[in-house]
Length: 218
Image (cartoon, rainbow, N blue to C red; front, side, top):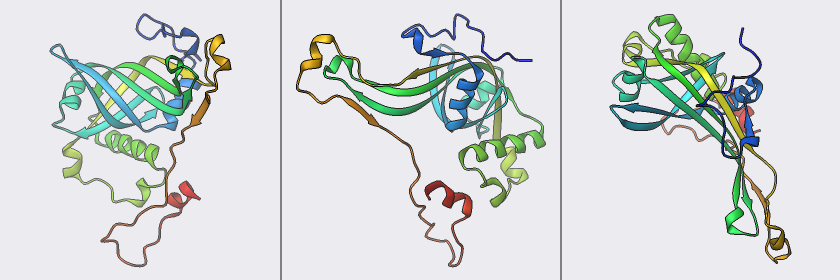
């Protein structure tokens, strides 16, 4: 059974501002579960690539999906190692000195190996997990994928081998001599939030916005 913390290794140890590093699963998983967009880094024949994509966590596994002809998914399906990153921006930190300007953020870096999800039932379940991570309630309110759609879609499972979170919070940290400067300093909070939905132009009259969407902006 996995412990409460990810073991620190050469590749997942936070070095710059090491005090901001967090390795406990509660923190790492909490950040992962709050977001739904990640960046997947991998290398093919010495050329690095970083691709943004939707994801979802399922226990100790990250699911991603896309076209079966995607370069990223084709390579990951062959067991290529990957580095997955997720970042949530919480604020712009404005110091008195431009040198000390910063950001408040919560980030996670994951290391693991990709594997193709081949079982059709597990593939559908993984797609549901991804959909529900983006918007809970939508999967049951949508037409499910057809056999043809499943055939042209690949789902990759990346088992989380190593992980680390890095968090910056709080106000600016200026040099002592700069605190007397007549310059505003502080934090501009940033929150990602949904606005009222815009109906499709082809939506027939009488179809109301579902309750699971209304909950997002009420």
